[in-house]
Image (cartoon, rainbow, N blue to C red; front, side):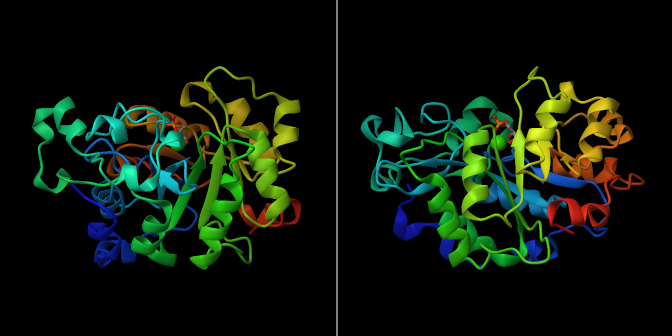
Length: 302
Ligand code: G3P
Ligand code: CA
C-alpha cells in the first residue's frame, strides 16, 4: 500500500517523457485519456508513463478535491469503482475523505480484477496521485489536459489548480502556449478560471447529445479556445462552425481506428483516446486544420 512517503512522485521522470509533444506541431493532437487507460489503470503513473511512451501529446487528469482541500486525480467522485482498501477510507465520496485517508487506498487492482489478462506487477500498490505529484513527476516539458471534474463553488478548485500550476512554472502561459489546457463540463468553472487567469487556455466539454449550435459556440468562444464534444456529436458542420470561431474541436473518447480516421477526415484538431498509439498511427497524413496563428488576433493565442 502506498502512502505519502512512498509516493512515486519522488522518482525520476522516465526518459521517454523527454520526447513528449508532437513531432509535427501542426498535427492533430493525441490526448491520453486518463493516460493510456486501455492498457494500464487510469490516472496512475504507469498509465501516464505509457501514454507518453506511446506518443501522446497530452496526458489527461480528472480532478477531485479532498475534504482537506487537496486536488487529487481520480475520475469518479466516489471511490468504489477504482479504489481498494479499508472501507472507511476507500469507499464513499472523495470530498468526504482527507488525503491521509486516501493514502490507504490503492487504485491498480480493480484493473486486473476487470481483466485478468492485464495482470502486471507494475500495477500493484498504486496510490491515488495528487495533482501536485503529477506535476512534480512529469515537470514542465509535458503537456497536461486537466479537467475540473465536479466543481463546487465553495471549494475553490480553480484557485487551488492555479496555485499548483504557478508553483510548477505553468501558471502564466506566454505567447499563447497551450502546454496546459483546462477543460470542464462546467461553464461556470471555466468562466471563473477565465476571470482569474485570462491567458490560460480553456476547453468547454459538452455532454453527449447536448446541442452545440451557433449561439452556444458564440458563448463558448467568449472564454474558451476549444470544445470537447462527445465523438458521436461531431459532424462536418460542427467542425466548420467551431473553426469559424477559432475553436479547436477535440472529441472524446475514441479508440477505434476507423472512427479516428473518420473524425480526422472531418477535420478535428485532435481527440481523447485510451489508446494513444492507435491515434499516433491514424493521424499520419492528417494535418491539423485550424491554423492557430490565424486565430491569434481572435483569442490571443498562437
Ligand atoms: O474530458 C474528456 C472526457 O474525458 C470527458 O469524459 O467522463 O471520461 O471525463 P470523462
Ligand atoms: Ca475527463
